[in-house]
Length: 363
Ligand SMILES: *Cc1c(COP(=O)(O)O)cnc(C)c1O
Image 1: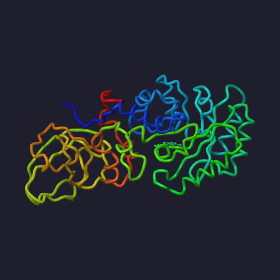
Image 2: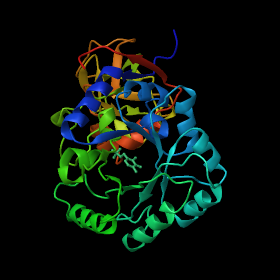
Image 3: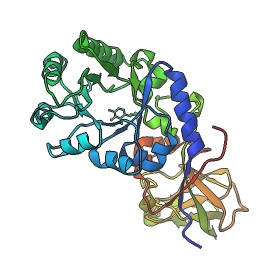
């Protein structure tokens, strides 16, 4: 039998999460963010699952063309815009929409001349200090873009929130105020909210919302679980026990022997490791589910394997199912234990762990 490591994708959960976004932001259109291979879930698969979205957001032309080549006809927005002038022709031909966040991207459009105009989103740096024009520059940038034959009018405007996942973060109001001032009087649609904005900050909803994490069932807000918000895990990382053994008190487990058995006990070896995307930094004690029972992992995960303490399920045998994260074990909990975020764990899943999808459940 093949190595049992699997990434199981629940399409019904994905649709249910999109429906929840619609309920939370009923007056906004939804740009489903599918960059980074749809946060590790599979670009085309997830675009199909989110077929009801009004647009898709991606990080680059290659991702956008992956969607167009698969027959996705919906609007697609390049969230970082063109990386070089050579991409403008593709943007036009494939009818992509593009962010403009830097002066030379304006020049690329200026040199493109007439023809079918491109839909442009002006990125405003309202305080995150990553991409975008400073608020004081926005009016000048907008005027220049509006004068270009290659640019569709009206423009659209967007910004990104730095700390919306923190309840009550004062920076959210400050960013909103900076954004509203910068764009006041400019005709066009607006987009501010990512998942955290959608979940907790209704003032940020505007014409378009841009959910990523929450569509996949990750928790967008600090201190609140995904389940609490009504989100369902789309990805389950699962495998099986490939060995069960009984070891003596004092036995040390795995590379470096970082975990010592306090008593004679059963342990299980799981076909799952950092070569599949399971975080090496998950400490001993990080939970996994063996036959649905929570057990702690013990020792360091290695490339292909990790070990679990089977004292809580002594009847476990080779071939029993093991869930590393998913529907009944929030990826956010594993991420917190490993000192990272659900985004990184989802994106880090490797194609070696075979993907399967199902469309069962409610949704
Ligand atoms: C990735 C991204 C999003 C989605 O953010 P989530 O926190 O995953 O909801 C939204 N907007 C932009 C510009 C992004 O780059």
